[in-house]
Image (tube, rainbow, N blue to C red; front, side, top):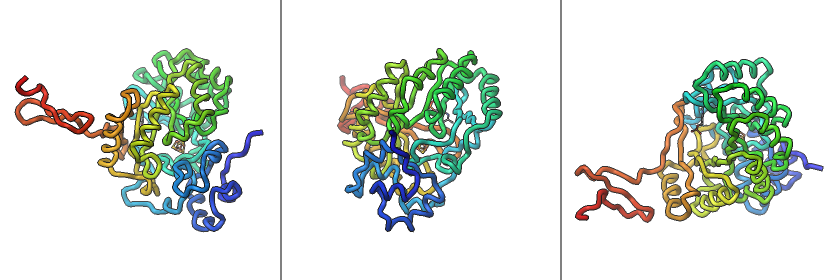
Length: 350
Ligand SMILES: *Cc1c(COP(=O)(O)O)cnc(C)c1O
Ligand code: SF4
């Protein structure tokens, strides 16, 4: 029998993950932000380690009550680009379709923390979903539909199959992408029925896996990813750079290698968004650039994510890795190698 998700402070205490004495300080946090820790994730946490990087991502902290003036409820500006409920259309050729606003776990740094969870925006009604499909069908420039949320893989295979059949008949949509944490946080959900549902249309299916620490890539998670890969799904990664979780070149290198070993191509490393009560997770862009530069020399080119910032206000993503080229002031360029040495291009006196 599957164990239950831990969704209250009492359940976390019974599992040995939160001392009883912390309840008073944490009750206002859980009153404000959704809480869920899946059994697979609970089993990964080392309760003896006060700095456990898995616990840090999922166990509430009193620091979440500190909201800074620059933090915002809608940090990446979803609402500014939502033509109909459930759709975010920021870039011409692709839309987000947020069919569901619940997740199997709630990340304490979530950029949509004011929208997801039992108190969030809920699941799209039948009528809203109809309107969302009508919008996609009417906009022939939409080449890709990105199911995000919430976590779309919490939907039953029956509902996923229905979504895929609805998208199958929209000729101009070629790619269906799912943003999910399920293969890591609830790997048993990636079963034959879910994979069959994804094959209900002949669209190309991508899964962007969200994981932030190499320990998340357990044998069970790797097996779930293998089932997806063997089911014809192309896998890419998304991680958030988080202080106290993965702000270390060794940890980031191990994470990227774990992805590649599991056939997941590193895609994005996100600078943390200005979500409310998340300042304890944020580092500076300079610190992020140094970490990303350290990866370049350390590990395979297959293991290099693109470091991005979602510009607050809905202006989209920008690549923020430090540039390795600059003009030399004489019409040529200076190029920095992976050791930090600078070379002229074209070479002088060659
Ligand atoms: C991040 C995002 C996408 C996807 O962007 P890619 O660069 O294609 O991964 C699409 N729409 C919105 C609104 C987004 O925030
Ligand atoms: S899985 Fe994604 S949407 Fe859900 S809480 Fe985590 S970051 Fe937010």
